[in-house]
Structures are given as structure tokens and as C-alpha cells.
Image (cartoon, rainbow, N blue to C red; front, top):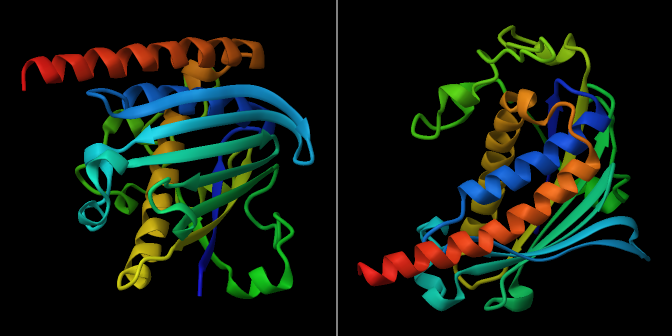
Amino acid sequence: MTIVKEYRITNNCTVDEYRIAQLYAVAKMSMNETGGGEGVEVLKNEPYDNEMGKGQYTYKIYHLGSRLPAILRPLIPKDMLILHEEAWNGYPHCKTVVTNPYMKENMRVVTETMHLPDRGETANALKLSPELLAQRQVEYIDVADSSAISKKAYKEAEDPSIYKSEKTSRGPLDKPGWEKECEPVMTCYKVVTAEFKWWGITSTAEPLIQSNMKNVFTMFHRQLFCDTDEWFGMTIEDLRALEEETAKKLVEKRQQEATTRTDFS
């Protein structure tokens, strides 16, 4: 049976602020994860108005290389170590579909997200069907809990339990149960459906994908909060300009560092 998990991440910001913070954090993460021929390639970033509703559509290719979990590397040829991501950002509702061209219909990770001005208590934020509700497992992510990440991944500059925003005076999130008292507040509800159909390892791969998704959500939102003074006050126009500039830099960075690596290999 396909694993369906709902991750609930409460944040110390408003729903409107999170829209800006999320876009900023994605652009920054893309730059940090790109280099040496690996990383993110943005093929499309454009408005949409169709049966999905209205919003911003993005189509990205992730060149994984060494970033692929070790258990999966022997199964996929090196020239196929890529993921395709399509995203429909019709904020406050968003949908992301990740596939692998080599595995085709055998791999599909769908994330649907709803952003609400609450503390994570909405029972069915994504309006899941009775069948999906019966499968759904709910997990809460505390962005200030450093014990939830590995010691290797820990960065003091990205620790919400010690960070204090100069612009907003928010933080540090150092008190147990901070999410029940902080103002402003909002919660991301992320329902992840992971399918990985490969004989012999499906039962291992699908939980691994869910574990990786939880780790990505945790690290992403820790950084998002600790970057408050960087994104606070930006407008959506500022972010679209940043996204365009980032897309160009990503191409240059991948090409330059890939060339450098080839020259010295």
C-alpha cells in the first residue's frame, strides 16, 4: 500500500509573509545546492490559468549526482540521476509532482500543501477523500528541535532556538510549546504520497523517500525562519525578479563548475 503522510509545520509568521519567505528560501536553496554540474535547472517559471486554477507554474530538473541516497545509486545509471519537478503554486494551495524519466510511471512523489493561519489543528486541511484519510499518517515537525536533525547537518546560523530577528523581534523559539503561543502564526499542511515500484526494494524505498521528505521540510523551514531579516519586507515583484536572476545564475554556475571539474579531472 502506498504511504500517505501529512506533515504539519507551524511557523512564526503570517500566511502572507510565508508566501514571500518560501519563494526566497527556494531561490536561496537552489543556489546553495547547485555546482559541479549538479543542482537545479529551471526550465519554466510562468503564470498559469487552467483547470488547476490560477498561480505560478514551474518546471525544474534536479541533477542529483552524489545527492541521491546510497541505496538507490546502484539501481539507476549515472546519466539518469535526474528528477523532474512540476509545481503549481496557486497559493495558499500548492501541488508538486516529482518523477524520474528513467523509472517513468514507477516513481512518483506528489506533495499537496495548504497554508492556513492556525496552529496545526485543522483536521483535514487538504480535504482528502475518506480513502486517503484512512491511509494518512500525521506527523508534526518542530522546526526549533535540533535533535530532529543530524549533528552533521546542524548549523548554528540556522537554529531557530537561538535566532532572533532584528527587524521583527521574533525568536528565539526556545520554549517548549512555542508554537502554541507565538504570534504571528501559520501552519503548512503537506500531504506526501510516495510511489516507488521496483521489485525487491519498494518496501524499503517508499519509507526512505518519506524520511527524506521530512528531513527536507525540517531543514528548509529552519533556514526559512532564520532568514527572516533577509526576506521580511520583500514584495512578490521583488521575488519574481530574484527568481529570474537566480535561474540565470544557476545555468552559469552549473556550466562553469562542471567545466572546471572536467579540466582538473
